[in-house]
Image 1 (tube, one colour):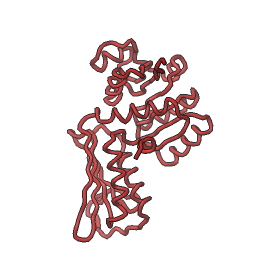
Image 2: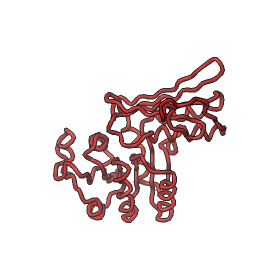
Image 3: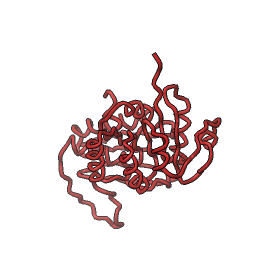
Image 4: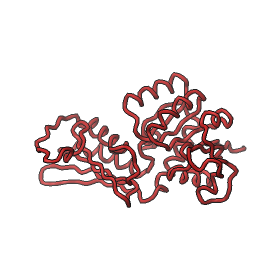
Length: 267
């Protein structure tokens, strides 16, 4: 029986995540990169751009034209918030299944996207983090919150990350609040505004942006006479590839909407 090859397009192909994904797709027997879009590296071969052999896919700038000409099975978006907002109508118009790794959408925007995908019968997976370890960290944090008093989150990223806090921190806090519905009254007086971080429900979130980090997060729980820290570190962008490839394979044959990689993992 002939294996079906998934035709994949990467938007944001010239970025660090995009280039890593191009390399990963090139190594898969059941996937074929059919297009790459970006506003930089236009006209270059996608393979040569990311340091592997030429693959015959040229980086294009016009997303709408490329979608119509190539008709991919799945498009992967790793751009940034404002770019994604411009790209989504084109994905919906062309009825292409999506894997969205770009963060920055509000809960209202996510709900609107979910409604539009369901209406048009388009498959879509939106995930703030594709590292398997990060997904497990979020699961552990949600379970732990039932037994510990409170939690605070510290997330660490490189200085080029445009949004704060990270989508991973937000989803972690949402899971904690869902598992343990409680209110928290801040008792500290801030000598410097923002010293106690941002608040999502009962969880304080602190964002660090420093060179040397890719993506890390600590979830610190406090209880009577004890603390518990759950930490995950992505040491390179290679850590995200198994999760993205899993998502591509799932969305190539699904018309469902998923928020979070955990929704397609057997946890």
